Image 1 (tube, rainbow, N blue to C red):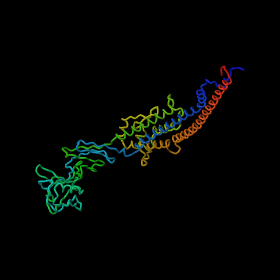
Image 2: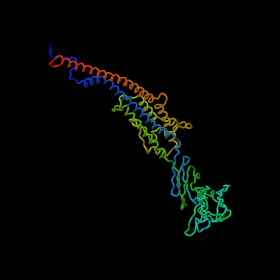
Image 3: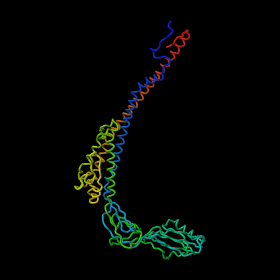
Length: 449
């Protein structure tokens, strides 16, 4: 009998690396899963890219909406030759030049009582103090007790909420009750009635009487209860802080800055959309960042729709400013926009109303407004019914969900296959070990292979 048993044809010699063999076999089965995972990564990346592109379009829409607001084209600024006359404007202002001469400042009433030697000692008064602010028919009544000091009476007056603040002042030797109106203007003058005592308030000579601000604007007298003079110049508020040494000149003019800033923001947002679209789908010699998006229809459709609106004449626009190029916004060869700030500023300064007809939808003039048209176009491609980008994102989402299910099922099969291999190899190793043992028991002395 031969003393050599050859099991090499089974590939199960005792020196075999079962773990390596199993890993190699599983690796073959793993290849379809790896390909599927790579595809899912690409699909997820494509979905994120389209979502980011949609977000950039939404930012562009925000910029178009800002330029669709008609009030900004009625934007004005005011300047003053005198720092003590500060002018601010609203959208109802109109261009013009005004001469302002301030002859009085609005003041609140200040009244002092008779002097006393102590701030804290009881005055021994019994009665009440009535305070009347302006034409209020009901006075505020402040009771006064014998033990009340100047400080106590002052606190009680202030606590009444009558529009008067009371305090005690010390002149170096004596104390006086000071009462000050909380609001300026003649209409807020304060009168006093002392009942049962006298601190010199009823018939006091005011240290400062309540008065209105007074000025002349283009030689027309105006007054104001406060130092804010509103309405005398349409859409303009004058804040006055000092009497005029010489008349101030206030100029009101259109303010192109806000419009120019919004146009610049629009150009920046538009170019961000174009750059993202080109990077995603490929442009010129540059390939798409993701092969799934090469020549993407949704992104391409959005870019074509926007560029057509950029170059087209706007129905109903002013003949001087029929399109964006007429105000300095031009289309470059690569689809991006350039802004000539000088041309834009000149257009706004010369005819802000004409510029507004280019940007703003106005049913009265028949202007469709390029910004309104662009906002509508963006809605159509991003979120409207039948939106290509919205449909694309949903398609990617569905595909990702399907791939996830397939990957889970395939992974389960691979895991099962690996477990099966491990079981089979373990059984085979046990068989080999058992054969070795039997061979030894039978007295075999040769090589066991």
